[in-house]
Length: 148
Image (cartoon, rainbow, N blue to C red; front, side, top):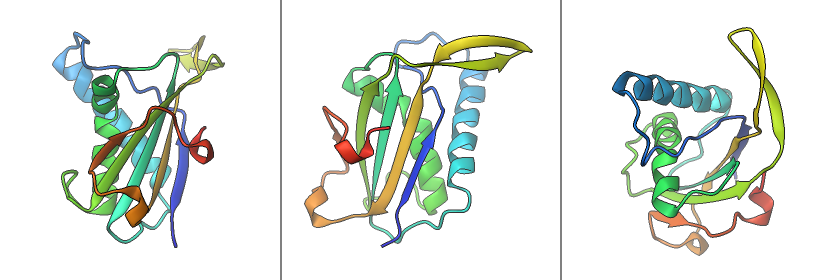
């Protein structure tokens, strides 16, 4: 059974209460979609129906509705990669999150800056009846085998 398991060094911002300029939000969304599509380049999408597990790792946890809004762009990118609309009933989305205190150095504008080692783990696999029939499930704790 083909499945995809990819980890991206991507910071998913809590967008719910953020006062963000329209153009800045559009740039961030395009960057997130492009990063997910680059990470999936070379993988063959599994046949539908599928279960998509996204595990957001960040400096702190988000509340459930914040987690859902933070993964909007990656979900859109996954749906585009699979060739369907993100509201297709054959897509089953499982969300989880983890906390990290690790840091990494990034270069921004020629300057090195320390930031949280945020990441997103994406696992896409065939749907099984054990996964349940709910289209969206927010997990309290990431599954052990899916922790980044």
